[in-house]
Length: 96
Image (tube, rainbow, N blue to C red; front, side, top):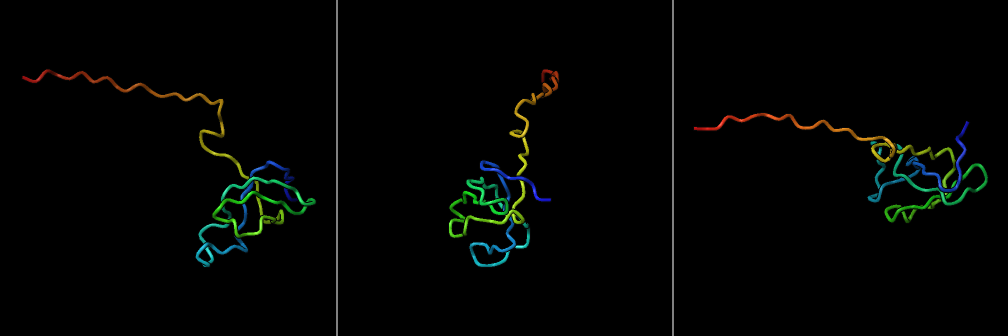
């Protein structure tokens, strides 16, 4: 079952049919970048806002070639409070 996408969702796009900018297939990873869906085309295709790097690509992809983007890092949990331990205080001996 494919996930339900909607306009404004962020997705990763499969590079299955992509070649990189130098024309070589890049097999080190299978999904690239985080793109924003700007339009749903039926239930089976999405149109995404491509970056300048991919501006020569067609911006419409079948939903089988995109997957939801899940935010990670500090931005993913904005309400989480950060705690830091104070530095250890080390007393120094006076030198003679």
